[in-house]
Image (cartoon, rainbow, N blue to C red; front, side, top):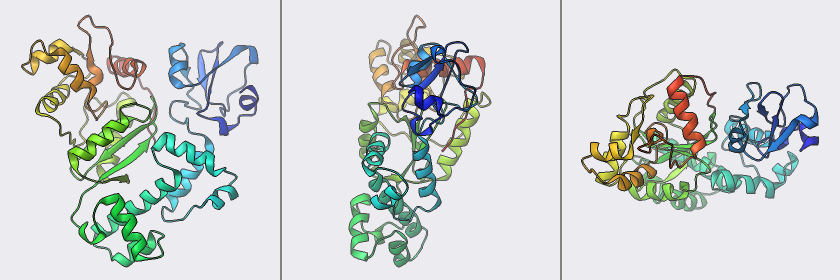
Length: 344
């Protein structure tokens, strides 16, 4: 770690963080700031550990926002520039990347292999093209498939129906973004945002299963106007300039869950409520435990502000993204101080 830090090696970004005892700041290994003496440095395996130890993120390298290794960012930029290109294992080796390492990273961060991610991205583009009235032949061959049959098989596996039956169909487009408190995944239908979660949350896989059950729609990488609005509003929120989100939301659940989630949206910025308070508001006094379960099942973090619910004595408790994030969010709303930027 010391060798990587002294060499400002970006390949180690996200694998560990460098904290400087004399300044109280923690950085990425690639940070261009002046290197302190090795005896004044300690290392942490995560942003959470560095924050818990009392360190503040560096304003130069912004470690809470840019923690992906440089090779990942380069690869994602390459795919974004031309989503229809075929990046084979041979192509990865030509870029100096070991395919197994790429596969492991994408499975851990995105729940898909790299090839699976690229295929879903291409098919999502094809889905949008067909929905907008584009010719099927163009969608097939622009997606990198050599035949209609191969395209049709892959398309039906992802979307559950043949291409010709999707012109009026909807889907859940998902997008990964970096935020000042760690990477998040967002999802939206044509009606509005239906998902905003921290990528390492253990509940994420269950949330995807619930999305499929509640919406009966395919989930694939993509963009939408709702996701663009969400990203812009999150940036303003973390900068301390936005107190109320305007992006449309869609959050079906049981009648009790949707009632709790709707009431969460009524808690004013900068204020908190206890589980007991919320139980009384929804007409179920004594059901604070049930309220807590519904709170934990919230699929749209921050925008539906479940972080504003605390214990009766005011102490922090139970937050799927971790108490350290809850503390940062409540401090932001109490002081209005900027946390950082949001990038996609």
